[in-house]
Length: 228
Image (cartoon, rainbow, N blue to C red; front, side, top):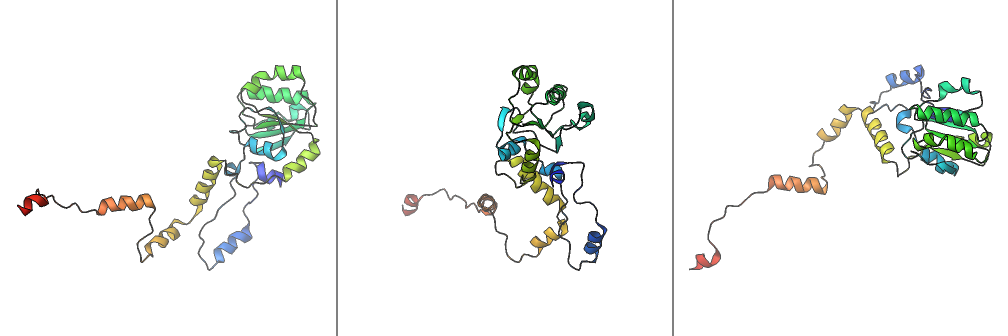
């Protein structure tokens, strides 16, 4: 679900007593328990832009900003300001000048909005764009799509959380998260039970050779001197 993918305030896994009991009664050792980590799974604004095939009005920091929630701005501004948080993807109709201005004001006050996504295919008013220029320069990504808000919501539902190969930061974060949840005692048994030398990588093998090398003493005589 969309909220489960992006809302950091939502716990999609929760604490299931039946699952905990199953793990307790399981006769097999538990090798690891990897919980859902939304911080590690947060995608970049550029990933959403690629998925929706948006028109980029302002690229800003689209490669660096991570999306942690999706907010559909259907209410009046006073009822939405609490949702203008760092990492929020704000989805609104392009004719909602009040939302664009509020997002720009939040950006100028140091709130790193994830991105602003304008629906409906309306052109952003030139005067409005000029007023928001400072916020755009501060790194706020602004995208536009031809679809309406409902169609855009359905498209966002189809967004895949598959790791892109060009996002090493997210790959490393997920690798570290999984590694932290594995049973260290079980990992240790994998090496202590070995009856043969471990397989070394080429750099490790060369380093091992330097530790084992035997330096032969130099006798100070060459073959010609020995023949004389």
